[in-house]
Image (spheres, rainbow, N blue to C red):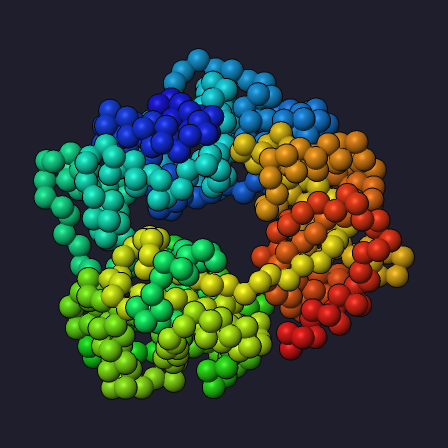
Length: 525
């Protein structure tokens, strides 16, 4: 546990991406199996553990530390794990088990053993180990290390190709001993069944105005960018597997999607809800997401279907290396032979000038289910990640509204010392109702401005939450707005983010909620 805790502490305190890669490379090179394998699984969120709820952790802390003292300390520190690491009052001699042993304990621990086990571990551990332990058992490291960066470190220490690692990744299981055998040149690359596992998706890059001058229009085609969930579908005999873009199996949430053909095929598409292939809002799709059991009511009211974009495998043949235009032809042929009420073929738009495509984008994006356009090079292979020059996304301009800052919450990780999570609202008569939470989009300087305002203008405290004087206006950008029964305002914003601080604008000039609904909500119906 000591080596693991020191590793994640170093990663948290290291801002440089290249330095993080080097720290991870050194760890993987010098740490034996299975320790490094379980660490790899934790960093890539690939390990199934019995995470202990934050509420349960706090119960244990309150039995050992004065509740008010803890609340004051938590407010000052801003991070739960760090607070516990510093305030835990007990110390015992001994060493924590290895990360491998702790993983096995957390996999098999019984409910009545959680409290004594955790109390014992916290008492044996030093400050850094306590911090790492709480991060691990609560299920959120938040140390600025993505799965992609971790795999990049694997490629760095082994001199292997990152794409080769990505290609086999989802066919491997922790602690990845066969992976490290190959990375250490002690064995051949692990063999996996490519027809039964998720494959990292090809993603797009935002297109900028200056990009168009270097791109030749007749080398590209365009498709609608739908506001749904990007998915990968594996059809193999009677089996249907649906994966999210992160590789999570979401098949149980969409049991109605069936396979009516015998040939094995892996498809790429956008999962939507709607009838007769007419998409409903993303808010409607959310009624189906993350449901392990789907009611008949949801199946009727929010039927799912998939807009097909691409084909990766057909009848056990890997098609990813052939050009998009040939994959598209094979997709069209497969679609015509395998009609299925749950699949619809994405429309391809041809054009001769970028101006023509701009007009399509401008005049045909009339509903909220179109996010914009995807622009794809006809000769592009299917490459995992975000290769440059192949696929672009041309999103429609976001909507904006000026809103009033109401509440603030401390951030996590590098932001734990700042108030960086904000609740904003609009007028309803003489009352202000919250319409969204926003926690990104601002610069470091703007973050300091907002943090200073919160500290100097707090009117009430609710644990870690600060209610502030309603005098600060912030311009919010968002993609769409939908009705919401969960929010007092009756609306929910899609991807709200801070666009700019409006210190120049009086709060009296902020929109009434009714006018906001008239302007934005009713147009999306």
